[in-house]
Image (cartoon, rainbow, N blue to C red):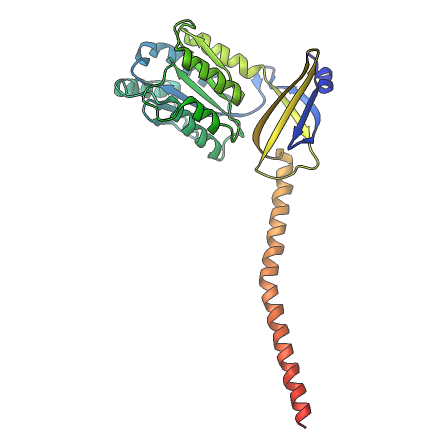
Length: 307
């Protein structure tokens, strides 16, 4: 579908204010992804996962090779808790991370599988992290199933409604043998957050599906003159007018300006702060001076009357 048809049929609003769709660009140009991304990779290290270690290794190798020079990646082991394996600033290789995951698989073999709590914690880390790309993606590598988690899939879906960090499930196993309840929840959470869910017993196939999902994305550039707030929760409504009628969807997100506009916003904020600071200093001085003048005028007047 070409851009002209998209622009003609796609309607976008922010907080019910219509916005102008100025440009549509493929996220992949040549052999690279143009949008820098921060990946939060969660590897299930619960009791059933050692059987898939070689497939996990293939997925991690693919992810490390796929990440560009300006992308950032953090890796976590998740069983009954979320454990940091590699932070965003670390230059650890795929081999070193894989070795750490292998050790975690041995240590966590008898623990629970609290995947929903792990996603929620990674979600919080992804939202709060600084000095990483604004596009942030959660990738969960698992064989499916949750055990001993205090958080339900319904709780997680409600929690993820604050911002949209896409959640991608890479589920190792056969589609017909995967836990149906887990697969259904994975599909719902992925769809709600803008991610996807894949099932395959081959790690290289799972990575290929994830890679294709990233490369097939589009970047929509919007202009909204009446919405210039920085880091403000907003509602994004997208509707498509097709042959079968209107398709509408709504999502909540945190609005941030384009990079080229941030300096101006920061300068305006500094200017407002400066004005405020000046007024805080000057206003008491002006009031004090006024009081002194009034007292002086009263004394002078009283003296003249006495004479």
